[in-house]
Amino acid sequence: MLVMGYIAGALAAFLISLLAALGRNILLVNFDLEMILGSFVTNTIGEGTWVLGFSVSLMAGSFCGLFYALGFKTLRKSGTKAGLAFGLVHWTLTGLIFGILSAHHPLSKAQPHLMPGFFGLDYGFGLAGFLLFSHLFFGALVGKMQTLRSRRLRTRRPPRLDSSEQKVA
Image 1 (cartoon, rainbow, N blue to C red):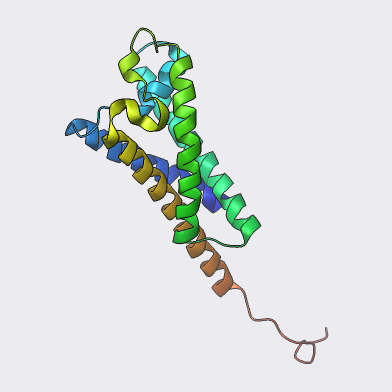
Image 2 (cartoon, rainbow, N blue to C red; image 1 turned 60 degrees about the vertical axis):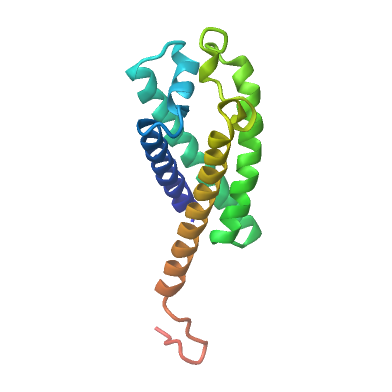
């Protein structure tokens, strides 16, 4: 069950990165999370920086999916609605962290236009809405994949025999 959360988190992070890249290419949003994450380490902007940031994004998505799965397991509830609730909490925490990290990013003084600010509002309501949507999508996808995995495991188990039907060897 936890492995499915890890995989679902990576898949959701990949799809969100793809959606954001499409948005950048058609000029809907100029936000590049992968570049921001990578430049935290490299202090530069470039292709290698983006690849590093993309890798960090996938790993972060994987671990967030793992935490979602732990939460679903603890609450004994998963599915789209539970995932949406987790996504809302995740968005709130991430929005606050964006604001804090924007002030401490190594390139924040040299290239302040890269920093999203709290909840991405420094880029305007378009990015803030995209971040909310992406976290809700992440939660819904991870929650749904957890539910599908749980159902598959339940249907695979052989039926239990009561003591009168068990054969003695």
